[in-house]
Image 1 (cartoon, rainbow, N blue to C red):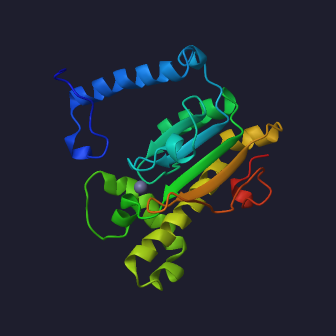
Image 2 (tube, rainbow, N blue to C red):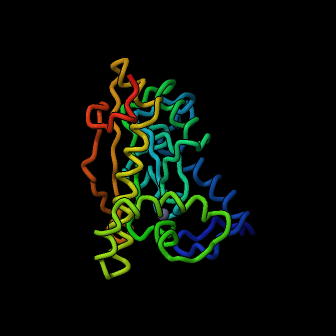
Length: 221
Ligand SMILES: [Zn+2]
């Protein structure tokens, strides 16, 4: 029998480097069996959605929305942040909006987010503390409501929701999004929270399609 086996999908701790490459061969075989033109059809991309999600391995954009390669342009970082000085995020956003002309940008957080938990733990974790500082700033905006939640898991989950809402707002503040709205390009910005325990996505209902409700100081003419 072949010495190299694909990684057992049900035990992540058994995953090996060689197993990943073997898994790739199986992916190619399976894809071509289902559709002989599978890879030909992916020679270019025209995704209608940009996904800004958490780097957490349990929140893969395509699987949880039942979509396929080519359908979602993806940017992920710790705790699905939209930081206006992050060149990586801005480059992805600019390309998605101005070249790919996506119709929707979705910030997707998830309950139980380790990044959000770390941000309110009062512990130091090293370099990442500077990234997590932005979540602490979100906490400060809602500290009365959050302080009143005694159950720590529930407090984290509420902060996850506030963090998504704030990052939707951060997207709206960018010149990239506002310029698209200015020229009448159809573009919706949305906030979702995913539950790893149920698989359910909750729409935070903060979708924006223009800058009408934005604080004046952030509005570009
Ligand atoms: Zn997370």
